[in-house]
Structures are given as C-alpha cells and as structure tokens.
Image (tube, rainbow, N blue to C red; front, side, top):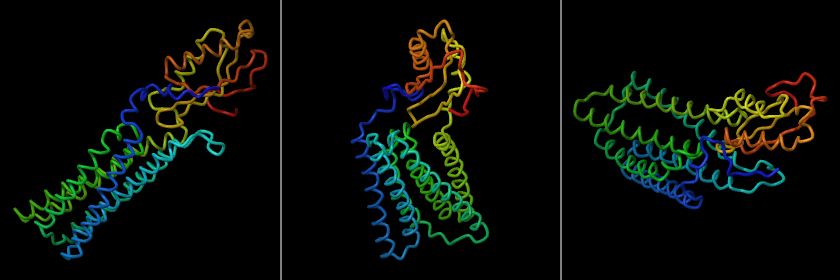
Length: 314
C-alpha cells in the first residue's frame, strides 16, 4: 500500500514545514557554534581571572551546546530514506534524542534542587558584580540560541528538548542577575537558594511534562486527541462493515499516525470488499487525518475466534 506522508495526523497536519530542512540545520548548527564559542571564551576568562563562577557558567553552556548537537545530528539522521534495516524510516531518532535531552534536563533540575537546599545551610559567598556581568553575557547567548530555535521547537519534540535546556539556562542567568542585584543592594543572601529551588522545580516540571508525550509515542500509544473507541465506531458505521477487531492505533512519529485492523465484511457486501475497504480508509483520512492504514478484510463466515476489539494478537 502506498505510504503517503502528506496525510499526517490531523492536529499537526499542514503546519510542520515552516522552515526547510537545510535552513533548519543551519539554525541549529549556528546555535551550537554560538554556545561553543561562549564556552571557550568563558573558560579562558575564568582561567585568566581565577573566577570559578565563569568556569561553572562555561560548563552550563557546554551542556547547551551538547544538547543542541544531539538535536542537530538527530535531525540529519531522521531524513534518511527507509531501508531494509529500518522499514519505518529513521524519523523516530528525533524522539530518542528528545528522550536523552529531557532525561539530562531532569537530572540537571534535580542537581539544582540539591544545590539550592545545600545553600540554605551554607550560603556561598557571591561576588555580586562579577556574577551579574557573567550572567548578562550568558543571557545574551541564551537569547540568541532561543531565537534561532524557537519557531522550530513548536513543531519538533527533538528541537523542543534542546530548546528547554536553553530556557533552563536562560532562567538561571536571569535569576543570577536578580540575585546578584539583591545581594549587592540589600545583602540578602537567601535570595540565592530560593531562586535556585524555584528554577529547579520549574525545570523538573517542564522536563517531566515533555517526557510524557515523547514516552507515549515511543510506547506506541494512540495519538493524544484521538479516541480509539471513537475511531473504531466510525469505521463500524461504514456500510458493509459487520464489525472491527484487532485495532492498533499509534504514531510512527509526531506527525504520522498509523492504524491497522481486521474488518469483517457482511455477506451481501463481500463481493465488493475492496469498495468497503476504500470507504473505511476514506473515513479514517477525512475524519481523523489517518493516512497510514492497513486493513485485513474478513468474510462474516470466518472471523477471528474470540477476537479483542482493540489490540490483541494479529
């Protein structure tokens, strides 16, 4: 059966090609380069000035560059054509990359939470102005990276995961600037652990929320917003359909939804089983935006014994 990629699942259909792949690669590549350059500059500055804050910030930016690099290579691999090893194609590598980046993001969030709690007991000496300047430079780079990837992040879990690393870093920079000002102006050292815990909580919450969607696709879950029962009922309303069973509904990638099912055709419509099949496919495409459909047509006299309606053996 022909695999028509234009029949992507309804929710994301028609809005996931804003930026052509090469221009997208250019943007992500540029974001990696900007972060690597900043990392090198901060390490050199840190070594020359003896500032641990600068070197710590350099490591933050290196993690940004790494997450963007993972996203960049995943994008490249995802566009490879289908082959004998990967009969579904390579699109899912973007979800694997997102899984890696979101997991590391949550780990960073947990580490920040630990840091925040420890700072309540032992507030570190914060050299206000130096920290403000360092964070200001980092924030500019974070803003450039965010602008480069923002539009793409809306349509890709892969880019979104790398973008969230960047957002986490930008939030850190903003908090450091505010904390630095509070410490310089009011000598309020508790601002540091409070801000750290706030950001840690936000990062963990964002990471877990995004991870849920990625895990759902990797676990072959039905697309959010599509009720399998409703889809099956719509198929059973097609004239000539006795019943539907062994239904599997899943997403191959974020924008490609697939369905397979056994369709029992009534006796009087069995001579036109191909017409019934075409009608079922048409209903699935028009009502639900499902374009990848595999149907096993069965006569009413020989349906599967004790078949499950949704799922079950093939």
